[in-house]
Image 1 (tube, rainbow, N blue to C red):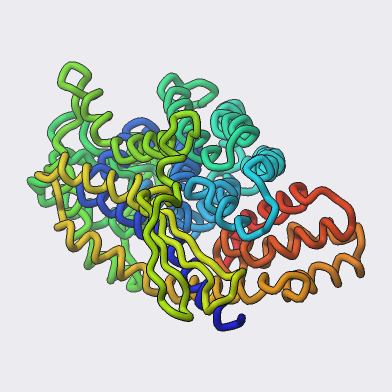
Image 2: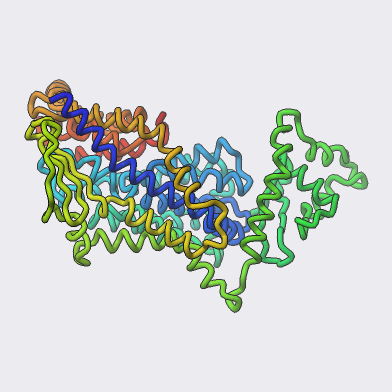
Length: 539
């Protein structure tokens, strides 16, 4: 049985690994086809350096990305975006990690629920939805309480948050409102739909400055705006005087570089403030452009960074007006996102009829591999391994066309490559090769984790998970409820995944709930909520 459980665990790792491969492929494709740089340029143009607008738009964007791909992708994309907007690197990473904790329950089209809790016998689709909306209530309340008071102040002055409090609440509601509503009906789309609607509504709020007050950068943080095209619609990059790149840009301006068509210095009042006429030491301004020795490496790369910015701008071209086809370009460049959402909806809403076709297990053909098990492959490409090592309770299945891998990630990636083949910065072989390289370490962790999970949940009442759940619940009784979320947090802390935490401790939470006579779905919702929170501090 133990050997069979380990083999089953290794097979189970295929689902999260292929989801991760597809998600990485999609965003590597977006980078290579300049779709992601285009979105970043539009974000910079829209927010115009307003720190509160930047943070709330990034929150909505990261929420949407979590719903589509999960597995750390929002932090990998969002943190560099904040850094490129001129924010502190460490603060940007911490901010995105904590922001992500409000979304991972429904990450990768609900993987932590349908896959993470899927090993618990007796749970139906309705039970999954019940877990979803109970977790949704907890996370929505936490978002309103924690985001404005603890998360946003990491990068934004409290005074600015107070001035723009109305905008923060409206933008936050544009995300968490749809999330809460969707969680009552589905466990797959809350993050995805909530994040997408949040991006759209937040963009409208920013465009019309609803609840958004004028933001004046502090003197030592005034932005140097670099327009890399002759058009006034060029890319605007935010660099601060204490940023090592600032000196490189200043040097580039002094040389009248052809690559930088327009260099805009800080406000005239800043120049006056540091002028000898005003009695201010002019050396202050020189010191602000000085670079310490610790920044030498950054300065050596500065020219390469600027060259990269210019090459991207040259490939994208100047921003278009509506008359020049701006809307068409916007729809095309954002296709990887809305195309993914569309395919997920088409393949998961049962009323459409595609879901049943993609998960059919018959008709099938079968091949017997002796004691290893019976292999089955259905017409819908559902792979199954039955009676692993002749044990009747050990089996595995993998729904190739339903798991978010080929549909939508790989399919959308290939279509995007075809549409923007002239913009490709890397060959498809290199893109998919990068995905495989990035999966090496996660694969080792997942294989070990899922083998452990299978060892814990097999053999009925004698399973370690059953024993642990029964003993702890009998010892703590109703007091176990206070520790349920903490257990989920610990699972994410050690594994780095809400899904793995649910897989590991979901069974224990179920046994504990039954033992003390409380709602199983409520206990699992606490498990999922705690696991989601644990992603902010995971190893």
